[in-house]
Structures are given as structure tokens and as C-alpha cells.
Length: 256
Image (cartoon, rainbow, N blue to C red; front, side, top):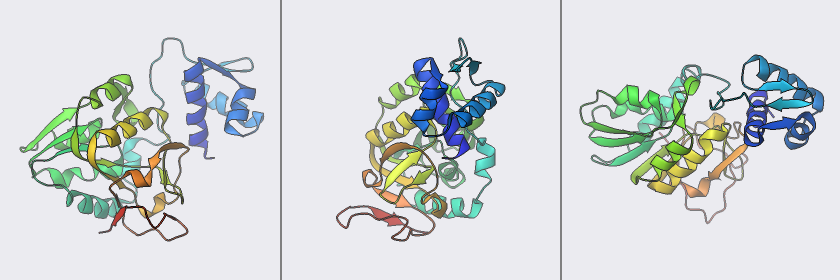
């Protein structure tokens, strides 16, 4: 398990229960107690929890959601060519006048420059998407409110999830941190998983945008099975070892 995944798991457990012991976290994450103690020291130094004897507890009065290990800008700058190819293919799936939902991922955000001349309604919880399309003349933007995750420029929480349940979209475009060989779509951010699942629920069509490095990628939280999506948009078809779907699964793999 990657360090950032372990930290996210610790923060989720502490915030859910209010506190957690080293022994509980060690058993839950299947790592040594010494590793957990080092993680707690780091998370306390980062101001994300309060270290107490034998474990950790939440910061009193804090509602700030967990940060990502890497800020949005850093992730957006990686693999730009793969993101561009996937974005171009994804934009080709959208008809004029449709209502679409754009997830908070950097690959999905790469679609924005290609959408500026289109006539669409965009539903999103991503402030990066809002900024990119705010002055596009033919685009109406419905922003899903909620609790701000500053370093990933996204809105999360019960308000976001509640707002999402009020809309229906023609097509939703989602990102991922990884896809297992059995088709399990993963994420590393606990607060974003309910939003991603909500996008799947309110969309007539849904597409997963994932470059070849996302097979298997990373992540420890299940969002959905790949079969739940209408199509997979990727820059390189995953081999049978990277993705082994049943023959009867009706999933379209869309390449540049």
C-alpha cells in the first residue's frame, strides 16, 4: 500500500470514529504498529489530526476533508500527451445541446479547452472545470456546492451529494486512480467516492477516462465495476493481463 493511500485510510478511520488506536489502525490497514506510529506523527505535523497517547483523534471543530498527496496542478502536468489524446476522444462522444457531468480528475479537466466552442450544459464539482469554462459563450455551468478540498479544487460532502441527486445528465465523464484486472474501478480519496458513485447514478451514459498507467494504477476504495460504465476511453488498449473482462460484458473500449 502506498504511503498516501495509507494516510488516507488513517484519516478516514479517525474522522469516522472521532479517534482510533494504533492497534486498530494497524489491523485495519494490515501494516505494523511502528509504521502507523510514524504515519500519525507525520499527519499530526501536517495538521490533519491530533496525536494522543496510543493513537490519534480528530482536530476539534475541523470539517476540512482530506487533502490529496499531490495538488491538482502537479497531477495535471503529468502525462500531458495521454491526457490530450483521451480528452479528444471523449469530446467526440458529446452531441451539441447535451447536459454533461465532468468529474474532478485532471484527465477529465483536459476536455475543457476542447469544449469551449460547444453549446452544452456542464454539471461539475470541479473548480478547475468552472474556471476553464466560465467565459465560454455557449456553455451553462451548474456548480455542485459543498465542502471545498483546496489542494484538489473540488467540492465534496453531503451538500455535494444532495445537489447531485437533483439532476440528470446525458453523459458523465469520470476519472480514476486505478483499475484492477478484474475491472474494479478504484479511487484513493474517501470523500470523493460518493460523488463518483452519484455521477454514475444520474447519467444516461457514463465513460471512464483512464490512461494506460491506470492499469492497475493505485487506489484502495472501490467506486464501481468497469461494467457499470458505457465505455472506457483510454490511450492504449489494456492487455489481457491488465484487464480480464468476461466475454459477455458489454463495455466499449474507445481509443484515439
